[in-house]
Length: 235
Image (cartoon, rainbow, N blue to C red; front, side):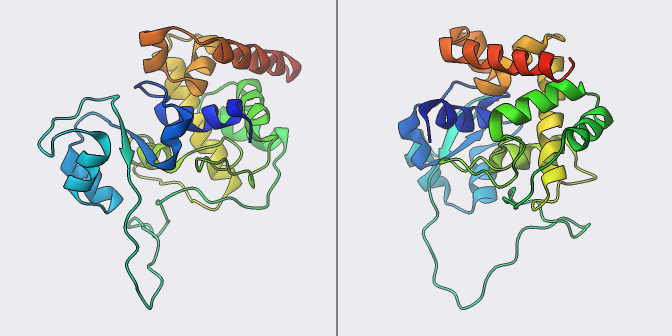
């Protein structure tokens, strides 16, 4: 796993705000705080104590969270059990916990159809997908980014909660992984004022980090690579 790939896997979490995390932070589970979230809520969702979450981030258990802040979620202490817990599901019965890799390779046509359905240029989604996984849903990074669009679990949950609350993503589907990435791209394009280049940079580095630090040199290389692919795919 290259440093560039590792950095991207973290950036998929921070794409909607916050600063990029150092590679050393990847041992814990990164989560971007969304508007209205509290330390109690995040701890409950991740199944850990408020005290453990606060300690992992060097903050008070009573601290107020800021949207865009990146929290590191420590691993839960294993609890012996004789049964395998069922995955989290919604009332529709579709699992929402986290994306799962599957042995699927997708086509340009499949990506285009999903991208078109959410209002994202097909060539842009194809370019990002090729850059990240070579259109392979079996790819998993060292920090847990999964699938065609390299989506991490916290971003998956954010998309389910805020972008697809009535139609949650199926976690073991290449098509749903593409949909998650396309929805994220759509949001980034809107936040970037319609700039594809800035949206691509946000997908890699995070718009919050870009606003605070500017575009890093490796981010610019990533943008250049994706834009070249965008042209190649007919953008």
